[in-house]
Image (cartoon, rainbow, N blue to C red; front, side, top):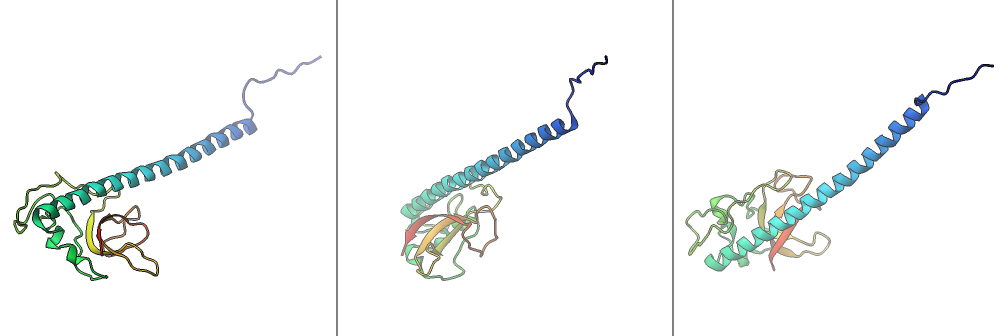
Length: 166
């Protein structure tokens, strides 16, 4: 009588099953980490925007002005051209001053780094925070969010912090 020796190795089918299972686990972990990373980045932006909003409030308390030498009276319904696309410039008055802010006691922040997606934070004194049929105008500091659409392009991806409303 002949006896068959059983191989202690894996069959091709078993090997394919194991590789498929490992690939599935990697994909699921990748999705989980991707979502976690995005929510962490968004939380970082919210935190930074709160710091910038506080700095703008301190600037206003000291000088009576917001970035770009605007005031609360600047909150209007959709006036264009009054936005400031880079809050690190002197006319923002947050990190440095252009010497035109009366009683400036800054810097109000040591630095303002780009958001996690590489975009600069902006200041807009007439941002529609209710983009539906109604309009609610507010002064905001914001980020163009994960999709990083450039300046002048507002969409639902934007992340912002309200400083004042009309």
